Image 1 (cartoon, protein in one colour):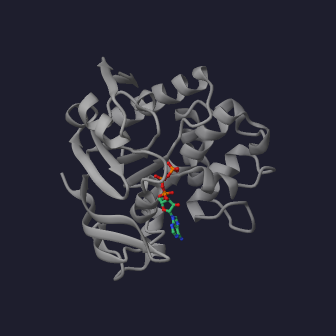
Image 2 (tube, helix red, strand yellow):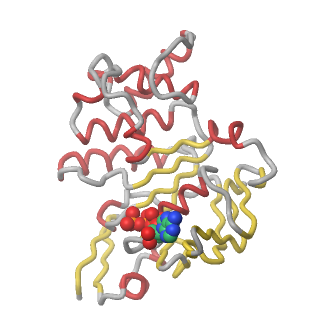
Length: 260
Ligand SMILES: Nc1ncnc2c1ncn2[C@@H]1O[C@H](COP(=O)(O)OP(=O)(O)OP(=O)(O)O)[C@@H](O)[C@H]1O
């Protein structure tokens, strides 16, 4: 077991506003984390730190054994998979699905003059198959349904075999069938011993895939609770984090929450 991410007393301040406040957090390589918290809590900012897109204003962030600030982030970023709506907006809608996934090998969005090796094509085809997308490989990305596009984004983010996978609200806007299909695939992926460490942000406990091991609750830029999922995703801690009396249940690894 080794740490892939270590934040020590990390704060992020933007335009005089403290967005993350003295965060201490460690993610080990065999852990799958979910981050929950109200709107504006700082969840996306925390993922931006974890993907080396931003640096801490103060404190120390160590990512894959490299201290942020003393490492070339362009070397670090290919080792981190990141799927988010903001990233998806940069994907060309006219590109065929196979290329959307394959271009991740060169950290580019949109096929240009790079020449891809046979091994890249085979890897992209394997990843598409793992995420049940083989039948869509030749279709244009922009023509896919929301659920299919979300799966393509995740397939793209695992194309480089990352050591850390970051998912920002992967199930947002999906209908029930698409959500359940995605959660099933994520559960399978997360349970594989070869899977990277995973950190997923979500707004809903119903979207936590079975097999996720840890949870971090964030509110007003501070950590309200962090640790093993069964100890953290409880009525007591979620009620405190969301400022609302909640009844949280866990049935065979799937969570539900409703106002008490
Ligand atoms: N440049 C800035 N100056 C001041 N505040 C900012 C700036 N950028 C972001 N914020 C604030 O930081 C807070 C945290 O934003 P962030 O997107 O990380 O939250 P979040 O938990 O992901 O929210 P959501 O659940 O709504 O997506 C928000 O209140 C946002 O308005």
